[in-house]
Structure formats: structure tokens, C-alpha cells
Image (cartoon, rainbow, N blue to C red; front, side):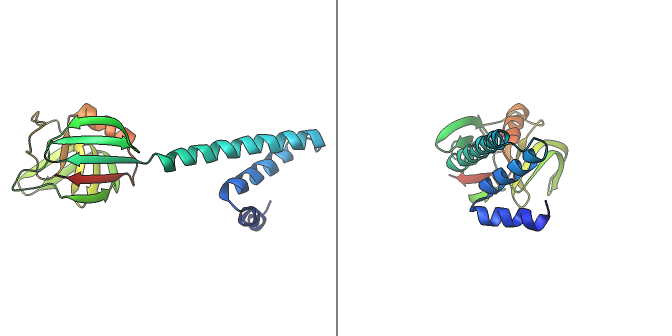
Length: 179
């Protein structure tokens, strides 16, 4: 099937899901006999696949993942909609190097990353998730003072907890930093 026909089917179908189902029916019909029964079975399978895709998409839309960082409590909370998934003690920025307040999104993720700034140069920082300029949520192997503001503005977590959050988030996950 040519690209223009395929894109035309998707445009005419009314939704991406229906277009995907039509493409699936077409692909499956090439490898099966062209009897009425097999065409009905193929259409039914495509409908089930389309519904499954739609249900998964709706779950993601109705239950967005987001991270709350409470500076006064030194706590990171991970949410799926209104359901609390994780709650961890953090170490955020000192008074002289505060963590920025506001609403952000995770814009990049690194399994390990070298972090440098005025007064620090730390290699292999684990599970770094940048949310605003050089500010990130990440694991900290160099201290164990979680619950106390000691960082240069980043949100430090114990490495095991940082790994959980890293695996749970995607680029684009919302981050809310508040007092």
C-alpha cells in the first residue's frame, strides 16, 4: 500500500486509532485467504487491538505522572494523577544556592553525568534528570544528609531512590517545586 493511500486512510478515518486499525486489517489481509470469515476475524482482531491502544492512551491521559518537591519538608513525592506512588526525603539547595521554585518538566535524562559548577566537580552523578537549566533531580553518593538542604540547587536523593524515580519518569514529566 502506498504512503499516500495509507495517510489518506488515516485522515479519512477520523482518528489515529481507527487509521491504525485499518492499516492492521490491510496488513493481516495480505497474509490470509480472502474469505468473508477470515476478513471478519481480521477486522475483529484489529478492533480489539485498536481498543487496547485507546485504553492504554486514555490511562496515560487520565493519570498523568508528575513530581512534587516540597522544600520546607525536604521531600520528593511522585504522583500518578492523585495517587501517591513514591515519597522520599531529599536534600535540596542551601540558602546561598537555592533550588528554583516553579513548574517545570524533565527535559533530559542521563544514567550518569558529570556535574560541574562553582565550587564542585562531581563525576558519574547517577540518574540525573534535568528539569531547569543545570538543575536536576539525581542520586547523591557523596553525602547522606537527606532531609537537610546541602546541595548547590539540585534535588539530591539516595542512589536507590533516584534509580526508582529515573525509571518511573519520562522526558516531559512535570516537576512542581514549592515551599
